[in-house]
Length: 262
Image 1 (cartoon, rainbow, N blue to C red):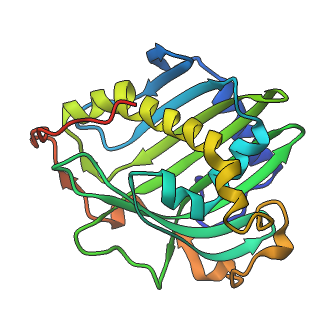
Image 2: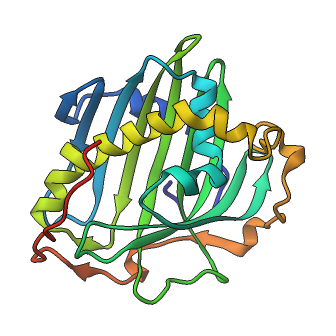
């Protein structure tokens, strides 16, 4: 999200995000295998801003289940192997909140984290969840973790049938660092497709898991269930990349460890 003040996305913002998810001109396809397609834009060694788009056709998961899985923070802690810590900070409206997420980066890169304003909207039988980085005085950058910037990141889920959907993930991110070539290459050929596969596997197991973990609690569908404190927009400001640490990791060699390629 551009601009100088924190705003909650309106219908035009969601429509713009959807259009960019569907638009392929200006994107370079880097991977197309097993029902997963990956495009990149400006994904080059030494560049500070990266754009990647992934699309997965899921023939065994409903759009509703996919939407629940991407929202359910308790379940994410179980299936997302890259998560270090994630929690909701507070709510803004019935369909917008602020949260923290930190994740493991490939060794020997330093791990990253973000504070984001997340918003979501069902559009007919489709769904959009999107976010952008904000600053909150109570959650400054942590020592040892690089604070990244989500310029705009999110998911679009499109219903294709009763148990059939398409998931598009689009990320426009400044990782605050010059990344090595092997990370740039692997992000589109291995990391992104692997992450999409893990989401699909998580969806297949969600119903059984949810039955044992507060099955009726879905505040993203029923906002009256939320227990989050309200946050005034005045407590937030736009996270400017130039105010954050920028590190050069471009010369780091890849750690010799077995990669998860499921």
